[in-house]
Length: 594
Image (tube, rainbow, N blue to C red):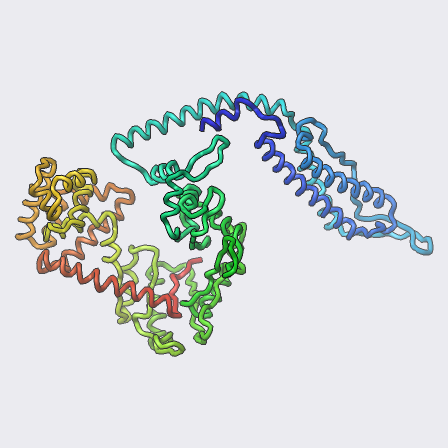
């Protein structure tokens, strides 16, 4: 920031000023666009009037003026490219004479007789509009200010930037002080520290590898990055610094990245998908003989059938473009059916129910599944090239959230369709449920280091990772619970007291009653309700409590066994079903409302 502020104190000469160069490039680009517009207007006029202007003298005179203007404009744009000072000396200008575009006129025919000629007024109006747009763009840059004006701006900005950057330094210093007090680092802090360790800045401002980066780049055999389209500029620099022969400008020869710019979803976290596109643009198609940076297109879809691929391509060919999405959905982006021997066409349908509510949506999907089951709709069999009638577990309904699960479950059950809603799997992984779930497991068996760590580091208790490190350093053997129990650190006394009370409750109460008691004593349910999106988090915790009370009807140990069985069986089964659905043909779409 200090370097950025210093550049304002001593303005460089015009030919050395990068800001003036940027401004000049911008102006030239705009002027050439205006010149191209003028040239296009002239060509339209020639096409309408004809090369001899229909023999009408007044039109030919105006067209000669028009032609000269086009040449002068193109020449002026080139002159500014060669000599940017023309922008600041006031010598840059182009004269626009008055040109009248006639929509009619009279001329003599071959026999000398007078005849009237009419031209297309729509074309003439279009030519006039294009020429006026060119004039407006051109006149905007004609000697608007001098270089002395720029120098005075530098002086003003030097004072402002010095105070601004000083204020920013004070803010950053205070932020660092507060974080140091709490021994805390944010993710961006870690990135910046990594950059400072891996990069060395030379006096001219260029960046090269630090000794540590050179050592690490020799250590790593391969640097592999997934989801590269969601990388930031800082992350890209880190990747390049630790790759072999990598520089700040180009990645090293052992750098491999996989990504899909169409799946970029983290711009709000400063991810820049243009980084991915830039790397592709600076590469060549892969060949075994090549030594340049290369890319391989992974656009073959081995899961979906012909109709699904065709439908996806048809939709995105229309809605995705450079202007809307950053890329054109063309070669290299559109999907290609990967199975060369694929003969199964599959099915992809879009059902539109106007003004339907969620319940109607659920009924429609349930009825469609029932119909397909009755018809014995064919789906791919595990044996290649063969089909079989569909089964209930071939269907998967994808929703935005869990709030409407009950409606869909009711609609499917009404038609005797067996249904499984993957509610608990989501709940067990929810960050606001995990600590409380871990507490239940610790009450059943406290000698579980992972679960106990989760409880101690949760909002239920005030302990920090450093506290656990110090505890482990003092008591190295045995379980973490043994270290808490037999260690001499008095800070863990409240936790041990809670454990004694809670474990006694667990021996005398049902799981449902135990959970209610824990909610009351810990205040955790209220704390979850105060989180961002607290109402949903609270509902999730209550839903988990209801599931746990039912699964633990025979006691806390039974709950833990059901838990283990659920995670090892149901979740794996659910994930397997999800993967299997993706390989098969039928996709049940969430109904669109128009």
